[in-house]
Length: 286
Image (cartoon, helix red, strand yellow):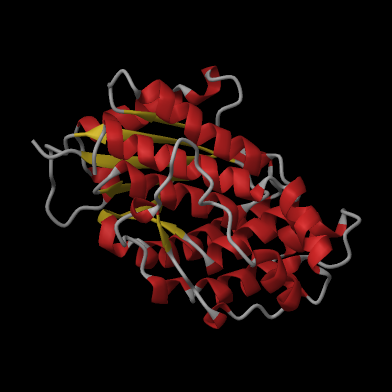
């Protein structure tokens, strides 16, 4: 029987936000999901939806696409913190014309088990559960990338996101390159939100990378992980000429950009993501 991958995301401490901030964040998340659903349309079996209780849920054709969706979502809503679970299994209770939250099957049960196990995982924010013995290795790789990204400053996170907008990691062409361009308007909206502007104003940085008029149409070059030929280590997350290109866009020196890339472990996070995707392919398929 065909296996699917359910993704469940939950906002951490969502009720701790002030009422207006929480409303703004929820609206922004809905807008983010709307665009990401277009970007990952080729991989979605059921659209990702935002339901009551600040939970996000969707169904994908592979664990790789579910993970890539989570990864980009996590970058876009930073510094809002989330936890997530990916469940791999059958989708055997199908309700016609119903959304993901109304469906059932082992994929959903495994995703629920995964997200409920996050609190016991000592620092992990996402877990994948397929019931296979190799899940432990996949989760280690996933969370190496997630922890590296989570330790970034907001400035470094925005550089990471800019890198992903220009050179998005992809698997078998699941990402719609043209839809990525719509993220530009989403980022502009985020820059105008009271919650995010207030959060940034409490930091010492005067100008963040995504405060500029960043034109995604300059060049979007997806990097398909399936085409990455590695020897005995992974290094294809590094992009030749990235610091020079970013420095030209941001109007700063290449040396400053290189320092931020290094301090933010951007290449290491991308390399760990590639490892996780390759392990999923090897041990789960898709």
